Length: 442
Ligand SMILES: *[C@@H]1O[C@H](CO)[C@@H](O)[C@H](O)[C@H]1NC(C)=O
Ligand SMILES: *[C@@H]1O[C@H](CO)[C@@H](O)[C@H](O)[C@H]1NC(C)=O
Ligand SMILES: *[C@@H]1O[C@H](CO)[C@@H](O)[C@H](O)[C@H]1NC(C)=O
Ligand SMILES: *[C@@H]1O[C@H](CO)[C@@H](O)[C@H](O)[C@H]1NC(C)=O
Ligand SMILES: *[C@@H]1O[C@H](CO)[C@@H](O)[C@H](O)[C@H]1NC(C)=O
Ligand SMILES: *[C@@H]1O[C@H](CO)[C@@H](O)[C@H](O)[C@H]1NC(C)=O
Ligand SMILES: *[C@@H]1O[C@H](CO)[C@@H](O)[C@H](O)[C@H]1NC(C)=O
Image (spheres, rainbow, N blue to C red):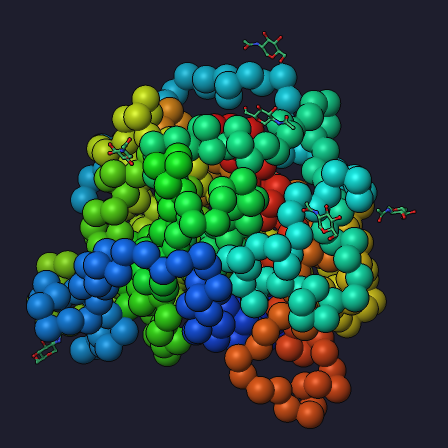
């Protein structure tokens, strides 16, 4: 009996995986389009030259031959050979250094209802809000999702203070690098920070591979770089990246890293883009366009290793701070927190209380791989381990309360869960706390 059940479960897995990939495709990849809308509402549009310059690496005739863009194709595809990108210089730090002050793990705690000190800003007051994340504006009736404070066990998080954060950023560049989840965190940071800067003293560039918010008085910038796979890929266009296949260069972060050189604080993430099935690898020295096809985890590990090599040889921890944000959880199957139900995050209004809860969307082998890579870089990279705390927040996603660019069929409209976004996060909300953690560790 038990065995039978196991077998049944197993045969269902691929289907579940396919549905998940399709879902991710729909909710993430559709909606990067017309992201520029959020910037139009910004203060004034500044520094167009810079935008032209950063666009130059896109698919222009003078791009270096072999640079990947959305028109790149593999001539043929073979199975991944297991090749790694050259020997890594990295040695694991053997001695277990105590993490800063071990007295308290701020990532372990619970969500406490607090409608007195939260939210830290109003959705409608933030000029940089995205229509993907503005849940109240798009009709969400329950607003409790804005009122949960993260309470670590045994200590308190530093209280958010925008002026103090600007003091830390004075004369510096802070850059978020990654995918749309990381972009959500960047928007949250802008909303948390912008209100103390008077109008006319702040500006933002329009949509580009690198989007820059400037605060004149502080001579500081808060930037977002679109780099969903971290290494060079055919999906590096921040607007047009709805592609049938993912092709990446496992041995090159240069396209993105050229910007990282002059940044003081870097915040990376990468996860969901690896979860859509196999990825094609096109090595730099491959002359005939032959790709290798690798499984998600192998491909992500290659990208992480390449990223780690850059960190190892370019980061002086006295001059540059680097953070890696762990996987952002999804809430695609309500049966995982409420057995017997068929839904997803749609209509969820409160956090999960079971502190052991961990959803199947957060892949443990991936977490272990990330842990191994960042452990080797211990002195140079801090982990913002937001996964467990965000697992509890099944109520934090936009579900149907966001702008959808595609029109929906009558059938979909009759079943709201079918088109709910259970991947991104409403603002004000969960990513504000990720930024509070960043503030805590800066
Ligand atoms: C750890 O933190 C506690 C309380 O914040 C402090 O009293 C103690 O000195 C710290 N220890 C170290 C080694 O920094
Ligand atoms: C905060 O929540 C409490 C309990 O739900 C409620 O009685 C109170 O009116 C709320 N206060 C505000 C300012 O929303
Ligand atoms: C949000 O708006 C309400 C009503 O306009 C106001 O009372 C409150 O102070 C605002 N909150 C913040 C954080 O600005
Ligand atoms: C915020 O930080 C500034 C500068 O460090 C300080 O002057 C101010 O009192 C702080 N505000 C609060 C509410 O703590
Ligand atoms: C502004 O900050 C940049 C670094 O981001 C620095 O190179 C420059 O000298 C600063 N300018 C002023 C006027 O402080
Ligand atoms: C694919 O093969 C053709 C002919 O062999 C060659 O001209 C082309 O450059 C190759 N494509 C790539 C991406 O290398
Ligand atoms: C993040 O925290 C979880 C427990 O919440 C742990 O299992 C995992 O190893 C941590 N990941 C990293 C990269 O530190």
